[in-house]
Length: 184
Image (cartoon, rainbow, N blue to C red; front, side):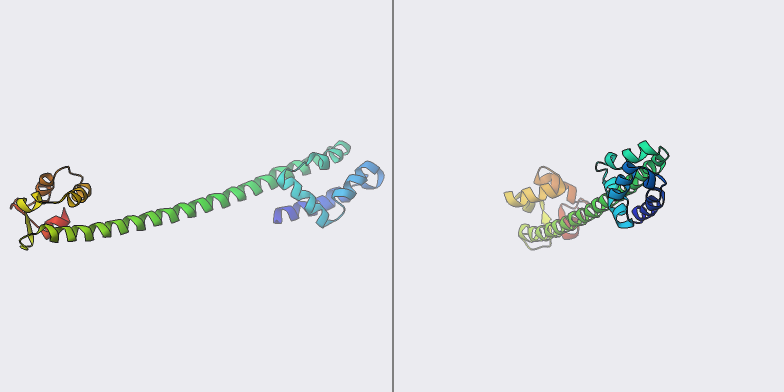
């Protein structure tokens, strides 16, 4: 907005008060249509910001006074660059915010899945501990049902219950304590 205001003030000074406004009827008609007041000049310059058929505005004026090309070239370059960079920055910022939100949602979802897995594994340990000793033996792991087997092998990335047992029995005692079960 500030850039348009500055260029509008310049336009009023350079174009509206141009000497040809009084002497050339064609120049005066274009000035009267697009640059007769500060608000009208700002509306005209919005067209330049959008690059909306600007040739019909500047071409008759530049044909009469080629020096006006400096004003219009600067206007087109600065206003469109400022507008598109600002627009790009807004879009980038929104995308970055959305990416951050998506990452947080994914992290919360992963945390929730992890918490559910821990609860499921705890319940599984209690189910598998047939003798209620607080430790799982090879025999108890071998008796695992298919649902628990699938969940346990998926959680640890191993194929068979015995591979799971060997991976979790870190002290090689032949039994898996609850701490070994969860630390694995």
